[in-house]
Image (cartoon, rainbow, N blue to C red):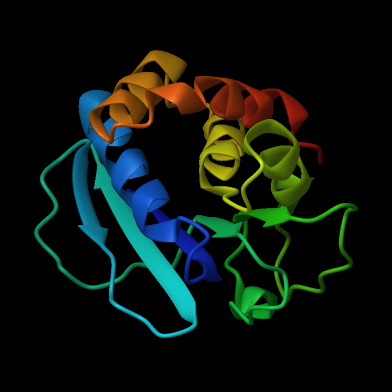
Length: 166
């Protein structure tokens, strides 16, 4: 089982990114649960996947964190061993975690503004996740983006995939 936690500010596309991620993973053959609670200010999304049916509705400790805004406290200090953290940041931030984690970063906001003239880093961030996860074919990501009516965002997805750094 893998679990993903997305954290951002309201208006950064966390809800849309969570739905796209869930659809793409489902289309890749995974059983999926997606929870997107309503929020004021900080928006979160949680996606849990497994090859077998998922019976528990409990939130699992995330294997992957997507942080759309580095000012949000996502309790990264307590991330479990082997967790992957992807941050929307110009440079690799200094994050101290109690366990060994892999940290990736991408300046999704700047890429979004340069490509679409909007502060909407969501598609870029899930492109970065697709590369870091490695088990999610781009064709399924593209299909899920099309289903959300965002077919004009394919270049943003590909830019996120190719621009993420470790």
